[in-house]
Length: 146
Length: 96
Image (cartoon, rainbow over all chains, first blue to last red; front, side, top):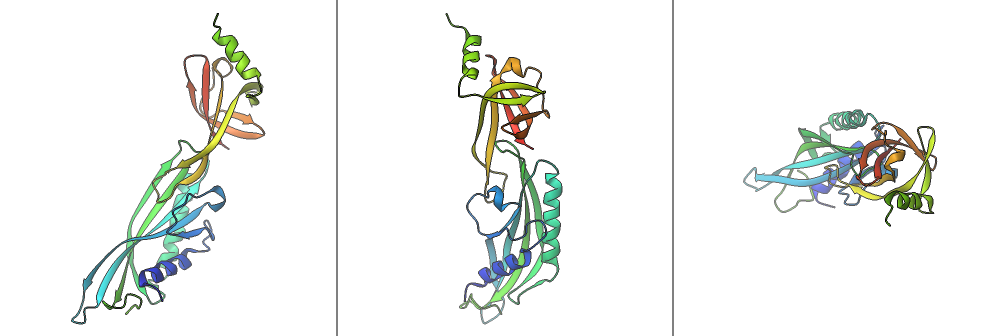
């Protein structure tokens, strides 16, 4: 078993693998640079979580912030490509709120888009989609979703 | 006696320079395309390259953004023209 947070990250990765634009270029918690052969790509990060006790058994309701980033490099229509990536991710994530029984997708918490062109042979851009996902565990067993 | 123009001629006539096609003519210059790590605001950087072409200003005095220059069979779009004021100009390129 693994922490439910990892199970959720895995479920999200499965959900967004095989999309038309990014295909199998899906990476969890990647720290190394993305080379041309890995683009366009999606990266998935779980960096924040809040929790509160919900009952006398001290079960924890946790709200996990998950970030899915889409990366693209293109000479033209870079913003269109990033919007296409976002549309594909949103459709995949919105197809079912349930994540393999380990968590529920609450909402898209925000979208940001950034570009850079200096020091690159082609313009590059990133679209960042934030999702809030809620799950419940006991206080003593973070590897089992309730 | 120092002759900056003659020095430039010698610089671009030697083995360090290559020929590029610009405006249907040939321009000699030094092509650089080193690795570049580009931060676009995401958690990870893009592994990229940073192509530039340095040549005599007189050879590209009318160069403007958007024109094409061909180097070693690859077409590039000129994105920035940066004369240094001493007779040299660096062209910042984007691969087409």
